[in-house]
Image (cartoon, rainbow, N blue to C red):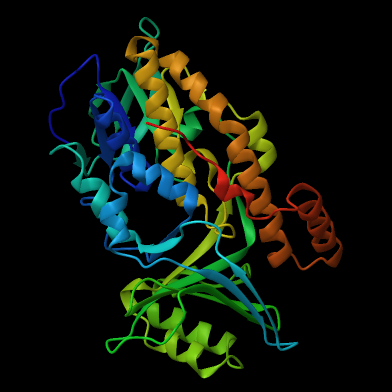
Length: 391
């Protein structure tokens, strides 16, 4: 990992994903120095497909100062359209507020470029955390044997978070769904409307969102069938062919979109979540250690809020740390958790119920989830009205 100075005022962020970089940038804008430790050897901007950013996420990006740069990389999404091929019905709804689909690479690059040089340390994989019994400061041990004592630690290390384990958070769970995602390029331009277009037939669904005049992001949730050799899903062509077989009765434009998808963009993902009831009771900070982003509240993609929620975390966390100062970082972390808890509980609960409606094979469970969605979220798009506030 190389030599890292023992700086008593050092804030360590674990993970250089969207939330980790956003948190480092938010702290930088508040005059707080941080270092981001990333296990990969470089920025993970060559993998992944796209991410939807809704109105609340753009509020956070405005506070981080990178929104205008990113607005040039993705066109506005104007509406949602759901087409039911089984009954030849469709429903159209205007998009509530600003919404765009961005390449994940563009978002990561914009956040990274706004940071001071050498903020991110690559090739540094965290092994464990413990607290110094005398100072209560976190001691981080990395797999190369090196250690560092930090002023504070923020875990942005995803659904399989080492920092979340230190906080004794309950393990994440899997939806009964997996998802295939891809990017399709149309060199001569596509003819699709700038809308979130979802089409269903025989309980299969495909979603399509244009990013710009040439690039289109698409996704296809599928039942999570246990067993079999998971290594087959590391082969992009196997992912492509299995998806085409599943969608054999879909319109030709949908099948063409999958056929021309960039092989490097094709991914197969088991959809994970942290249970809403665990979010209600979870201990999200212990002394000078806390979590943010997926490490705190990994959720399915059904509301399109996972990335935006992580951006909100970054703004709220940095604001509280700046207001309380690093000498009172434990109080700042407690205030951050208090401010964020019910927001992420509601997001996660709505996402969970939506995912179970789509994925469960039990008619009774599906009906129960539909009833709860109606009772608790009669305005299903209210989640985009949230404002994380000024940095």
